[in-house]
Each structure stands twice: as structure tokens, then as C-alpha cells.
Image (cartoon, rainbow, N blue to C red; front, top):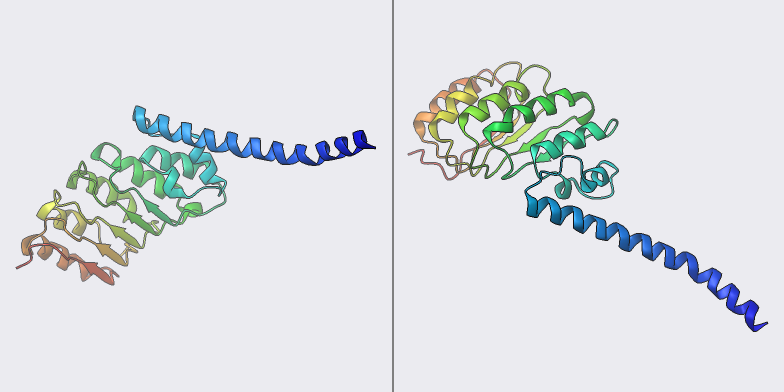
Length: 209
């Protein structure tokens, strides 16, 4: 009887031990994947975190740390939307065009409506122009664009945005907080606003007077 009880107890405990082992293995994999990507400068194009985010297990914030990781996530998500994309401090002129094309290409499924690009100090107005060519043109679903905290853009940003904001643009909110703008840069943008559906324009912490 004692032996039978021991066998029953062992059979009951075994599944719990297995689940605990699986959980530990999964967490170890997450930490190794993140540490390797961070230490080696790997943008994690198709790493474990991206696959877990595509499956809805972890937040997109954890997985999307570069333009290439976002592209991989959009490729993996065939039926699920990605309405909010935050790439703060992760975009330069080199991959701005790739970002715009990726969001536009996956537009029907991703339905991306908000793009945040705060504190991207390696992004110039040239990169913004390449990005807007895809994101603010016909067929784009983007409703909100946040370029705040990029003081290196300066007054050149006004004409660049003005050249892409028009009747076919669906943008409703534009955040340009602390972008190094003056009244000169805003003048070109204000003329473009007359022919678009923009509802909100944030210009705090710019030298407008």
C-alpha cells in the first residue's frame, strides 16, 4: 500500500515539475535572446521575442527594437493588426525608407494608425521625406505621426512635411514637440494644412516667437 501511494504521488507531481521546467526554459531563452541582441548590437530581425510578440505572448514594445525587427513582425502577422508602432530612438536615414515601405506594404492587415519616432537623433529631414513619401500618400492608413524630441530637424522639417500633406493624406494628428522649429518653418507647414484634414498640431517647446 505504501508503494502504491508513492507511485500515485509521483504521477501527480510529475506534470507540475514538467510545466515548471518548460517555464524556466522559456524565460531563460527570452533572457538569452534579449542579452545577445543588446550586447552584440543585433537588431533581432527574427529572434524569439519577435515570434512571441507575433503570437501575442509578449508586448510589441519588447520585441520591436529596430526597423528590421518591425518588418519581421509584420511579416509574421498575417491576420492580426499592428495599429501602434513605437520606434523611439531606433530609426536613422538608412532605414527610414524601409520603414515607410513596410508599413505601407502591410497596410491592409497591419492597419497602422499611429507611428512614434521620438528621439531619433540620426534621422534628418531627408529620412523624414523618404518616410513620408510612403506614409502620407494615397493608400496609407496612418492617422497620427509623432516626431517629437528631434531638435536636429529644425526649420527644414516644415517644407518637407508640407510637400507630403495634401488632400489624399489621412493624417489627423501631428506631434512636433521640441523639433527645433521657428516661425519660418511653421509658415510653410501652415499653408499645407489648409488642404488637408489635420485636426491636431502640437508645437510645444519650439522657438515660435
